[in-house]
Amino acid sequence: MTYAAVDLRQMPLIDLAGQDGLQGAIALFGSQVNRIAPFQSTSVQWQGASGSLLRLCENNFRLRWQGDESALIAALQAATAGSWVRSLPWLTAIAYPAAHLADLVPLITPTPPHQLIGLPLNCAAVGRFEGRSLLVWHHRLDGQAVVELHMATMHQEAIASGLTMQPDGLARHKG
Image (tube, rainbow, N blue to C red; front, side, top):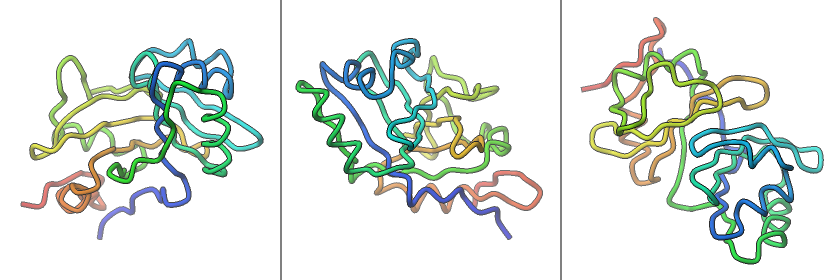
């Protein structure tokens, strides 16, 4: 028996990138956005819906959204003339309860200078699993701490089958 991943189907993953990305994020979510560094995140709200916003670099962000995707994308596009906003069809994620982060650490090789050991809440790191790139994001969804693994859609099946959560809590590689 394995532990179930956190269900992300009703929570789109939206990227905001370009020269006006920061201004668009501030326009919708407030000045707190400007206080997070790259690979840090914050909880955000807009029109009664919530999400987690991860800063990828100066003007680029990734958002796990728990509301109306099309309304949010339209609002971000209106606020950012020099940016693009979209869900990327080639990007997907698997999420587990954050209690399993320590179990995943020995299996994922972090890319320097990133570290996975003790990855704080609202932080992300880049790593690799069996040669495949991952973004590991530790944040809150619906009040629950989770660890999301972002990857290319074409690698999801291989990564998901390679990582399983066993009843004893250990992440094991099926080999």
